[in-house]
Length: 343
Image 1 (cartoon, helix red, strand yellow):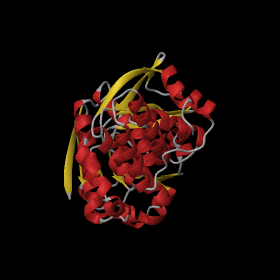
Image 2 (cartoon, helix red, strand yellow):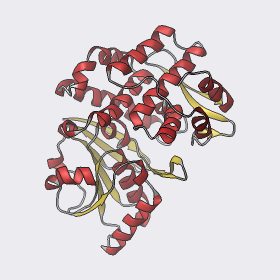
Image 3 (cartoon, helix red, strand yellow):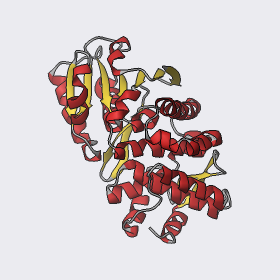
Image 4 (tube, one colour):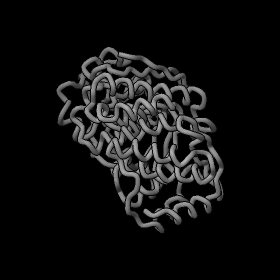
């Protein structure tokens, strides 16, 4: 087991890579927590949950709404949960978003932690203190910054995941390497097949290295006012594609990274060879480097990006593989770039 820590405004968040779900009781601040999970995780792993009140939500981005939050609030009131309670989210990124948002806002905040059951949640969604839900077609438009007390990354849980969910995590792993660690990028190029096979040593290293990158950035910029924006590489185009097409997050972000790398090359920040290496790595991991979509609808969705300020967007560009910069780019330039790209 490996340990990392994030020191947020609200306290210390401890991330444990390789800690199994069965050890959850050792990390809970109080016995009998409120457990929030989804239908799939509950059916497969409920026998490993500690004692506590279990709330089950559905799956998919469509469930990540204020309606779901309202239902959970009502159930918390019904069971007379008070400020001494704690909430544990056991599941993927959607469960972590919902559980973290509820815990951060119910009675002005109660203690909470996560057991991340998907690769995406382990390398990204459960870590860093962002908790939010979608609203009116805007992704993660309503939310909070609040760190979980603990995050358990049980690597054995990954073996039950379908390929589509693994792809989501691998897209974020590539993102972390591309923006911050050229050596990690090279290692991933070398070990792509082992990663796909969930080789224990390779997957532990990739999860840990991704978390080192994310935790280092979050420790410097918890509220995303500067450096943390680098973690959005590929997400401006990716979120727009995801909203319009409904494809899984990882596939959309993969296509978004290719578009962002193309813009980085157009601005002279990376070479054609570096752009092509990124595309080749994504293909090795069975991720798309392009897809069909309604260009006009994606252009419209770009205007709803929460990183937009007026007619400009805080956009992440590669400055060579393993380095990144954030630039305020006119929305018109992003639209022009998308319009010139064959989907």
